[in-house]
Image (cartoon, rainbow, N blue to C red; front, top):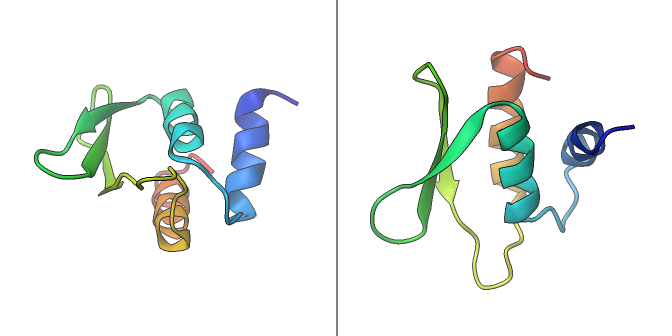
Length: 83
């Protein structure tokens, strides 16, 4: 099983300890690039060659994403046919 497959499986389980770094790696596999969202902790992941955007607040200080962020990302990836 590849790292991408392991991250997808992990994301779909919505664990309480899914990190920002894991999300950045996973979205990178789908062609998204990290962009700072302006001021504060907002970040955007923009997909190359199209207008697809996933945005949320970067977690701090521990880097663990909130459950609602995982749910939003899962919903977006499913809607786009990536999951």
